[in-house]
Image (cartoon, rainbow, N blue to C red; front, top):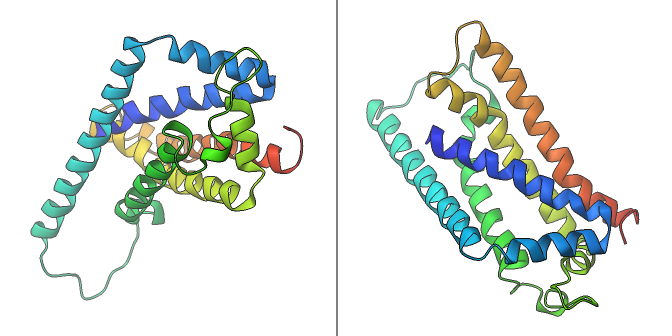
Length: 208
């Protein structure tokens, strides 16, 4: 679960870098999208690898939840949380909600079935007009809100998951665990601000 999770974290970083190209304008983003499409088989290898990582992450998290339940079939009479955090306690819940958000995201921007009226345009050079699709999508308040809320859930998951992943893989020491814990939260915040900047910029008219 830790290894697959960190692979997905790497994808999140790369995906954010690509998304932020929207601030370079229509030609920059559409050219980037066209280059990805021209990768052909390489792009599909990456996609299949990500799908495998997602499946492994989900299956192993379910196995872990079952093992934890079996280890203590009877709950505590009184629960007091000293070391754990809300993000850690809500990992299963946030994980399920993140999966639902991922499905919506894929249906919207990848398979382009939720908003076909704004998802199939082409620009003057015949490239898929990703820029216009994103702008018209985030000009609709419900869609923009859905993406910000979805990224909040993703980053809630990240705020605990990144540090936990490194610790599970034995890449931490007693000295570095607190540092990594805070670093994980700051990283999650940076990811949230990066992704949320796009719908915010569209709604505020900075990207149009």
